Length: 351
Image (cartoon, rainbow, N blue to C red):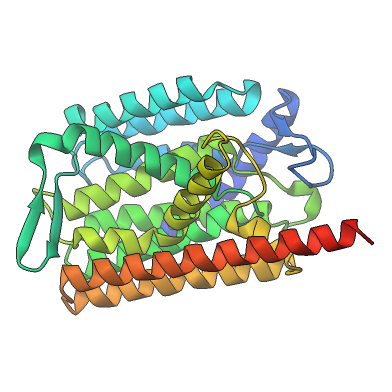
């Protein structure tokens, strides 16, 4: 049963943990410094993800029966938070991070029996299943989810806002399909992340700002995928697999489009740059607040379409090919905007 008083208490506990974590981060120098790619003022504690993880684990420890394989999930969340914090502090290499993400995927498969093998009826009445390929496909899905959420975390409030939209979408569908326990876990995450946004966006004062860090983006990415696979695959399978694409549309589209552009330029897919969708909108002259609202609105729109189509039982193939069409339009639009920005930069350089 959903307990509103407990969620309210969790919110205030999260705020307290965030403030304490912020002080600890400054003491151990776990801060983000401004540079050419990170244009903020002064050192900002990178402890949002760690604080979110602490509060989430506190909630799960009180409700171990809300979802299957809770102990495995806790182990995965803890591991990713530690690795993410080390990456924030020391900057771990991409090979090590990918190795850890692969091991975490295997933990999900072997420890919780959660894997991606059913894709729905994407071609007419033909059910698409790849049970023999479930291991590599699930590993790829885990790596994709973790890095998609990591890459979208480049603007104050963006990752937090998108996460709330995504977990809210999951909660709505899970409640609709009678999965109250899983929905309650999603609501706990919404509560905790809402507390984080107060500090991240400076709503309690600019001097109290904190960043999510890799610890947060990795934990959130993996947790989102955990819930998506748990609810779209056997034995639960209450949500259409194709609906998952609509729920995580914006982070997924941004990551794929960005990686493709980097590969076409013969760059490393994981080489950081300023060509993500939020960077592009900022270069077009939108304010940070406007950019956040636009992207949150797009994410909410995609999620709403997915929710409605799932509830109305729209054919999987219709949902899938509509998604691919919109993804194509997104890619063309972003590339057009980048070309416009580059042409403007050339003209200004010649003045």
